[in-house]
Amino acid sequence: MNKDQQGMDLSILRQERQKWLTWKNILPYQEAIKKMPSYTISKITLGDRVQIDIADLSPEDALSIKETALLMKPWRKGPFQINDLFIDSEWRSQIKYNLLEPHFDLKDKIVGDIGCNNGYYLFRMLSHQPKKLIGFDPSAIYYSQFQFINHFIQSDIVYELLGVEHVEFYEHKFDTLFCLGVLYHRSDPVAMLKSLFKGLNKGGELILDTFMIDGEGEMCLTPKDRYSKIPNIYFVPTVNALKNWCYRAGFENVEVLETMVTEHHEQRKTEWIDTQSLEDFLDPEDETKTVEGYPAPKRVYIKAIKTK
Image (cartoon, rainbow, N blue to C red; front, side, top):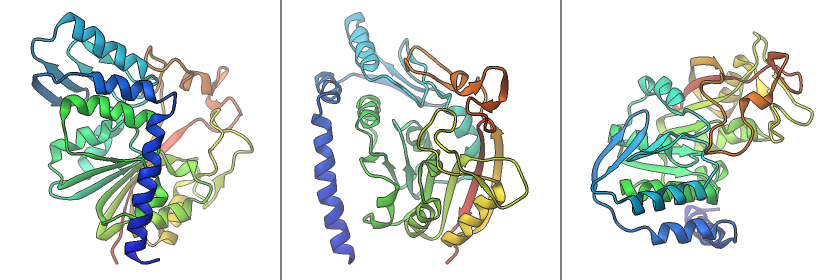
């Protein structure tokens, strides 16, 4: 398949996935966004909370904004704040972002975020003045949430309803790729890492996090049915096994940035999700284990370089 054919395939795929926005469970989100008026934005703060201050917001408009935001639950990533409305997402995503931020420089770079959810990390990255920001996530719900927030911010972030498997066929290569919390959802992690490798420019970097288990060996946990109540978790490696996957995919200079146990102050139930969260996924008698008896969620953060 040549590059023109690849681009044509993605174009067709984009058209097909735009139809997702007409699904009966998604259409109310899209209709609500289209009804939103233009607002006078007095200030945008891209800090721990992505905060939008609207000048002269009437009580009626404030209520309408809140109702639209509530319509789009669950809000997994955030937090966001629009005037007095605080969208307290399940994940306090600033913890992960602030952990990673000292390890990257995005100025004038082409940057992709694979599995970008509602774009929280992408909005935070705007302050680094990248050349281009592109998010990949095949979720019409998260895309709608992104549209809602971007209605106020009016950024030039590109949001693609595409997955990690499309990165290597994208119209251009990337200088930096983020892939946070995706690898364990793939049944062939090395193939996924190869796709990311092919999507990078020479000298490009991958910043990735995934579940891990402790141990010096080169091995991984393979859950029988579910891990932490999640059905599509295929492999949970040791750090050395993850490094080997990266080397097999072609990366060099694989650096471990941090390892960290997922704790309740980072992931928890809020009024913005209406579903279970970390407290429901752990053994109530022993929080070092999942309800299935596996080691409790722990993450490893790495940076891998494409040198050739």
